[in-house]
Amino acid sequence: MDATFDAVIVGGGSKGLIAAIYLARYGGMSVAVFERLHEVGGGWCDEEAAPGFVSDTCSTEIWPWYHLPLKTDFPDFEEKGAQIMYGKASQGAAFAEDDSCLVFYHPDYDPTRERTAASIARFSERDAEFYMKLYGLWERGLRDALIEMRFNPPPLPGKGSPLARVFADPRNRGIMDPHVNSMSLMQAGKVVWDSKEIISYVLRRSASGGIDPNQPGQGFGMYTVPLNMPDAGGTVGGSHNTAHAAHRILIENGARFFTESEVDRVVIENGVATGIRLVDGTEVRARKLVLTDVDPQQLCLRLIGRENLNPYIVRKIEALDTWRACGTWCQWALREPPEYKAAQFNPDVGGCTLLVLTDRNLERYVRMYAHHSMGLPSPDPVFMIYAHPYDDTRHPEGRWTGLTESPETSATSLTEEQWREYRKEHANYVIDTWSKYAPNINWDNVIGYLPQTPYDLAQRLTNMGPNGNWITLDPIESQDYRNRPIPELAYHRTPVGNLYATGVAWGLDYGASSCQGYTCYKIIAEDLGLRKPWEEQGRPW
Image (cartoon, rainbow, N blue to C red; front, side):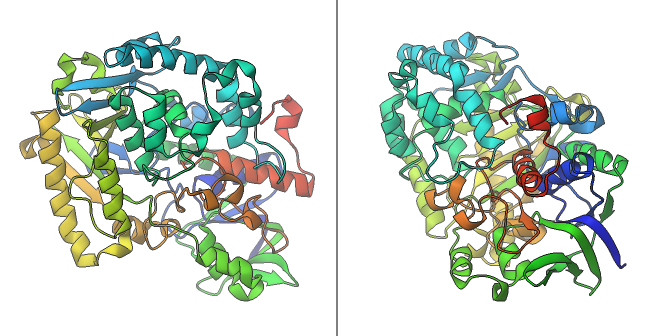
């Protein structure tokens, strides 16, 4: 195939698809998407632990803001498959010591957050009162500031972020202390909350993002995690339906898809990207731009080539940290739903989209991270249960499906043989541990299961790099927000003309949202004079 398109997209992941639908509909471009795998979607993917039991491999928590601009820019996006469903109890944590639980309710069922505060009050009246003060701050602008940060490119150097106006509001200064931002999560937890239950929940939630409990500069999460996370739900029928929605919009706008078509290089002529070359030698021309949806290492070291870059940029790319945010997912198909002992404490616990199975020993998280930093599996990882029991389209009637998630050491820390053995050990560990919280969980209840270790993820999704990092890059200060992946690439432009880059390694958010694809289109629209629906509608994002 020798062909020419206005825009050539390298990689059909969530970010590339979002940028593509904007380029096709609002940019008026002919678009072609080239994907190494047999289907597009990237993190919008599902697996079946047994036939008819659908659970998300990656994007299993969906927040209302995930696709916020698309609700107005593409009113048919949800209708085409990206519909989100929410449960009554969104997030929770069950504690081994006394079978108690902490439950955060979804705002649709708890619009004033009073029900959530009552759950917190069972552990600390003071924390419940403070939580309501935080919620007032959330409503006064914190939520909107975070949305602006997610759906706009980072502020230019020297300019403050939208959070600055939140901290400048005198009504907020006595609630959210800016000093806490510079603390570690562990230190901030001791300052912000009385109850170890909330601290334990936040430490585990943050561990999914590879955040060390003692890592300075992460204390802000002790404020925001209990506020932001309870909004989560799931895509009806599985997150891959979101990929279907984007695919349908692109087909309607004349886009072409080429799966099982791995790109080897970006064709560069006189410092400008003019197309791509596939591994089979086929060349495809791009009239206006090439956009990549791959990790920074593939972008710079393979697609562009180090010979076409400043050596200092190459050194920065080679020095990126990618070992912290690794873990094991395991899909489960069960004959009957888990029956948690904590339901006697709060009967809503079994309906959580996410449930942390933990205890009050905060040092356990420190040990878990220490093992990973030494390249060792954790002997007792704290895992979470992801499920959508309110979505009957995911499993046969009366059955249950979901996945467990455990932070783990990086893929390169163990050999392939060691990872094979780990899969068996980990599955047994999950069943043994889970049964302590829900006695009806045993191997007789299991219809099927599918473990996916960091090694498996690295083999399947090359964007996760050789370490199998599920957010591609570790969220440390040198690789965060304005510095993500490095300052020279943070605004989606590359040193090569007409070559743009997006992916989860850009921006503020690390999930499979629309954010980075949308902000990438914003940069392209600015450079090429394309339509700007956000300006047409007068919205700040």
